[in-house]
Image (cartoon, rainbow, N blue to C red):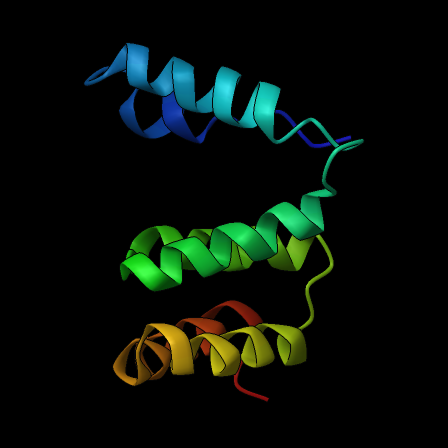
Length: 107
């Protein structure tokens, strides 16, 4: 079972309380918790691909970290980005590899 998400309330609770509530309770509380339909690992892969394609790097970094928690290995993250580079953009891959190094370490 996924852990309770509080990032919305933690970061935006005072500024945008309704948005924070929707983020934490609906997106993560209801959608991400539907593990019978898609595993958290699969949802992470899909979300990483979507954020990569949109060039949303701050959110991508957070979801790479969440993907790591959900069992996506560094090698798999690199492979996801390599695949996406051909469909979504080579420069985006260059930018994302730096995020993978931050999340997973340089090794």
